[in-house]
Length: 320
Image (tube, rainbow, N blue to C red; front, side, top):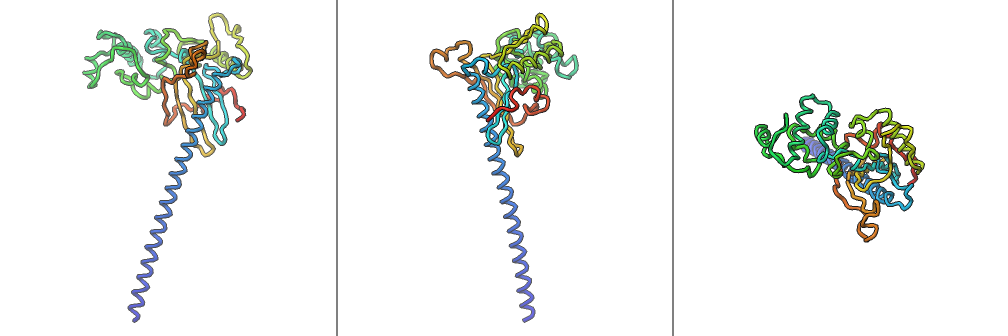
């Protein structure tokens, strides 16, 4: 009899232990699923806020009051959507270095911004030129099909203009790290051999060898112009320094959102403003914007919320 009671007690203890383990496992699973759902919800909210920033940018580019239109010279606009803070940067593509139209000297100035050996810089410039030219002649330290074959590549240069910035990573000697550093400075949409300095960012102007002090003065003049809605008075910067500001018709728009819980989303797009300068959309009723590229960034090497971008914010106290 006592043995039966002892066995029953042990059995009860085992059952209770099993139930406790099952309850703990269920609780852990529920906490994990709740965390996943919360993460998905926050991600969706952040993405929606970033998309709202894109819509706001398009609306402000069409503002009938020219003095109130958002500028496309690299300034950052900040707005509040419910519990999300959104920063939006508009940058003219004509204010960047076109890798299809830039000459060798411009490419050398561009690649010189990358902290790599001089020999590698020279080889990279030549390889870029070999990729985009129409022949199989090798520039000094460059690379054509034989060099790609020797390097174990299963492809060869296209011998035509770059179709995307991502294609640049296929150039012999290029890697993801270098491309990430070059991306804010380059474009394939300008089609112009010269950079429009009146729309160029601080980074581009410095890459072109312009005086840093004058560049900083120009950036502050642009910021004040965007805040006050008045034209830039740049005569004090000296002759030959084109510190204009305003709007362009081919624009990169970056919208980055940040929620109170730390979640965020980044959208990068390049659009053509068909209404700029009396474009066809202004008279034919066509869509005001044409999307040339659109992508969501999973991470940002340089966030619009970083401290070095705070000085570019022109609407830090904008209303919702």
